[in-house]
Image (cartoon, rainbow, N blue to C red):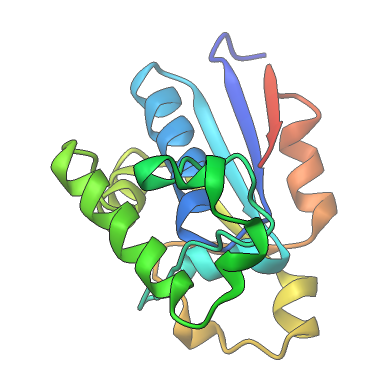
Amino acid sequence: MSDEKKLAIIATKGTLDWAYPPFILASTAAALGYETQIFFTFYGLQLLRKKLALKVSPLGNPGMPMPLGMDKWFPVLGTAIPGMESIMTMMMKSKMKAKGVASVDELRSLCLEADVKMIACQMTVDLFDMNPSSFIDGIEYGGAATFFEFAGESDVCLYI
């Protein structure tokens, strides 16, 4: 049995704000010497697309910090106003860039370079009639059982 620590991550969300945690955690773990796998299922599969078109969804995300203290006075329902998703996405991308945070593309590439194994859930690909040619190179396809083989032996397992 290997002494190498293992990190297993299940990525289920496909928005810009939810794209960062799996890639940041996976790339950090790999840099620390962990054998790392991410299992992308349901909406998390959006993170494996060649062309990312990720947006922030402020609606239903009450923990999202809002500019100008809007979270104190702007009604949550107001985030459903047409154009708010685009505005919030632009603001988040701008804030990330200003703070020197790597883009999702950069983090994803870093994970691939660090040999983080990325598994696309085959059942979800089939369920949503997704075309595997729309996904990046270097990923694998498998079902939950494939992931459980690794996750069952992992030191840390995260659901994101």
